[in-house]
Image (cartoon, rainbow, N blue to C red; front, side):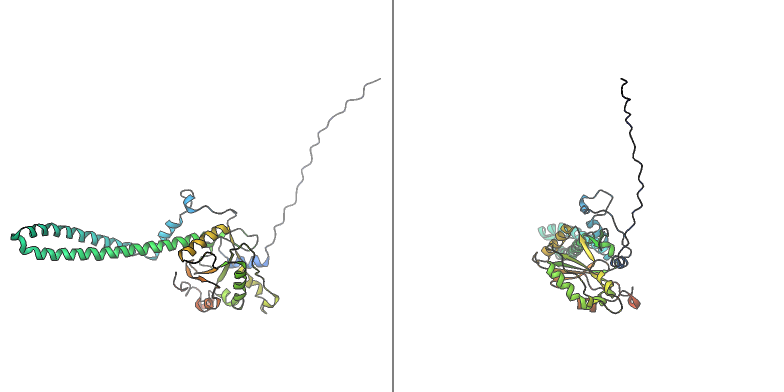
Amino acid sequence: MAPPPPVLSVSVTPPLVFLPPIARKQPSAASASCSRACRGVQCSAANKPSPPPSTSPAGTEVSSVSMAKIRSEVLSPFRSVRMFFYLAFTVSGALGGLIALTRLIPALSSPARAAGASETLKGLGIDVAAVSIFAFLYWRESKAKDVEVAKLTREENLSRLKIRAGEGRPPVPLGELRGTARLVIVAGPAEFVTESFRRSKPFLKDLMERGVLVVPFPTDGNTPALQFDETDEVEDGAGKMRMRLWQLTPVFTSEWAKWLDDQKKLANVPLDSPVYLSLRLDGRVRGSGVGYPPWQAFVAQLPPVKGMWSGLLDGMDGRVL
C-alpha cells in the first residue's frame, strides 16, 4: 500500500489593508467664535502641567522672578539711577562724618584746639543728617522695588497657568491673551459661579464690546450650570457669540488652587471665600474682591476695544493692585 502524500504547510501573508484617511472633525460654531476671540494665541499640544520655573532646565524658560525684575525695570526705569545716587550720597556722607569725627576727638581732648571744635561738630551733624536722609530714601526705594517685584512675580505665575478655550482645544497659558482680552477670574463653589453667570446676562453685549472674557473656576469640583436659554437669543443672532464670554476653562486645577490660596493668604481672606479677580489688557490685576463680580461697574469703567476708542484707551484700565 503506497504511503499518503506529504501535507504541505503553506504560510499565507495577509494582504496589506489601506485604511481611508480619517476625516478631520470640523470645529463647531462655538469653537470657531472662541477661536476668533483668542486670535493670536499659540496653542501647545502638551497635556501635562508645566514644571515650576525653579525646576525648568537652564536656558529653556525665564523664571517668574527674573521676568518680574525685568518688567519692574521697564515700569520704573529711573529707580536704579535714584538708588545709585542715594547710595553714593550715603557713602559720601559717612566718609565725611568719619573724617569730621577724627578731627573732633583731638579738638575736644586738647584745649588749644577747642576753638575749631564747634565748626567740626557742626560739619559732623550735617554729615550725620545727610547719611540718615539718603539712607532712608534708599531703604524706601528698595522696599518699593521688593513690593513691586513680588507683585509682578505673582502676576507672572498667574500668566503661566493654563486654560482651554472651548471643548477639544489644547491648553494655552493665560498670558497668551495679553493685549487681546480683559480677563475676569470667578473662583468659588459651583453655585457661586452659576449665580455670577446669571448676574452677567444683562451685561453680556457690553462686556463683549469691552473685550471681557470670564474664567470660571469652581473650587468644589462640581460643574456649574452655564447654559443660555432660548430667550437669551437676540434678534441679531448674537446669542451664540455671547456664549464665548464664559468658554474659557482652567486646566490643571491644582495649580490654580495653589495660586488662589497664596493670594488669599496674602490678603488675609479665608480660604473658603468666593472671590473674583479682574485683569487689565496687559495682564496686570486691576481689581479683586470677595463676592460676585461687579459687572455693571466693569461696563461703566472699561472702554470699548472696537471703534474710535480702540487703541486710544487700551492702557486706561484703572490702576493696578
